Image 1 (cartoon, rainbow, N blue to C red):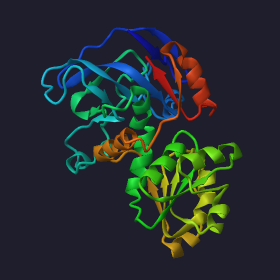
Image 2 (cartoon, rainbow, N blue to C red; image 1 turned 30 degrees about the vertical axis):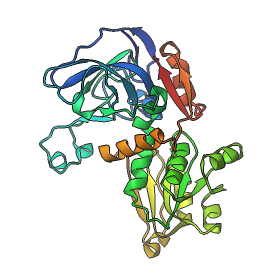
Image 3 (cartoon, rainbow, N blue to C red; image 1 turned 45 degrees about the horizontal axis):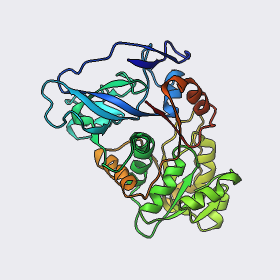
Image 4 (cartoon, helix red, strand yellow; image 1 turned 180 degrees about the horizontal axis):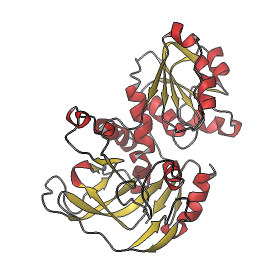
Amino acid sequence: MKAAVVPALNGQWEVKEVPTPEPGANQVLLKIHASGLCYTDVHITKGEIPTEFPRILGHEPVGEIVAIGEGVTSRQVGDRVGVPWVQASCGRCEWCLRGKRMFCAQQIGTGVQTQGSHAEYMLAYADTTMLLPDNVSYEQAAPIFCAGYTVWSGLRFADPKPHERIAILGVGGLGYLGVQYSKAAGFETIAITHSKDKEKLVRDLGADEVVADGEGLKAIGGADVILATGNSYKAASAALGGLRPDGRMVLMGVSDEPLQVTSEAIMNRTRIIGSTQNGSEYLYEALDYVAKGKVKVIAETYSLNDISRAYERVLKGEARFRAVIAM
């Protein structure tokens, strides 16, 4: 099979022939139809998320099950499925026993501890796969398994009340989905972006207001929840001033910048929440909004042979808004 292989730390991605894997016990073999290329792939290539090389990356996989291993009963050949980041865990530690395997120190992550999805075929643990809604295309589904899942999980974990206002900081690969999810869930939604060229688009996606920064957010009455979807904690720090009392900021982008919090956070009971992906229930809901036509993925599509160009556009922040490898 063909696969995009990262040969070494900071290595140049190479499309080459590698052996097609065979499913073991409790595994399925997916024929990949679409694989989202996420900025996390950049973090892994640069060594900011530790793994061993050579490595086939990709953690937004969707495809068709073409073979099943011993012991698989919940899935069958022909199923259309996707695979989330956390595929398996030890099953024995405190966090696994409490049903929070995303905290397991021995978790198995797609494209980190396993072969990823930038390939024609990929193995996955059967019970971790999620069936795709029949009316959702592979290209629409792929980015939901990281980007959409992450944003919706963060919003749900912030536990917004019906009367509260949601602000989305950054209108990039996560943020444009955040605007749609917030609006689909019935919340008054504010987009925070310096990009004037995105203002009409985010309003079309559902934003009720568009402001440039935290000061602008504060001037229109503030927000109860801010979803910080970008990779700049400098921007997140500046936006904190736009939170209302009892407000929550959810960090879901990775940054090496410090987050600066003032003493105002004490009097306002401000909460800072870290969030990635918080359970399969939220993944189901994230896909369901797409199936109902309330959330739409906007993506650039590339062939596997053109994956190096896709990677460069994601690296430089030029992809608008997601990059998807269609097999």
